[in-house]
Image 1 (cartoon, one colour):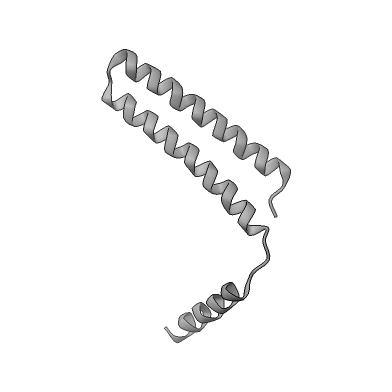
Image 2 (tube, helix red, strand yellow):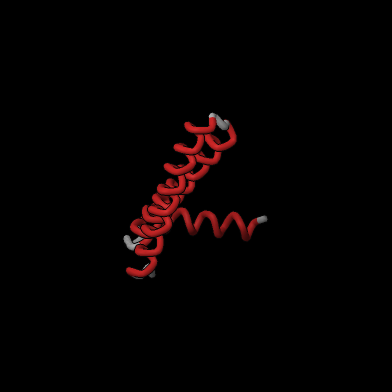
Length: 82
């Protein structure tokens, strides 16, 4: 189970990545460096990773529905067959 400290850590990483992205985009606008633009985009994508982590944590708190159980049984049967 995810704890409150997990969420705090993810939010801290998200804020840091966003600040890094802004800094890289400012540096890219000053220097005109295409490499710095790509680094800024990379930092924005890292920020998106934290959003996906938060989404995964929130969805993992929900109980499994019937479709999830059926999928798990079908997957297990396939693995036993192969």
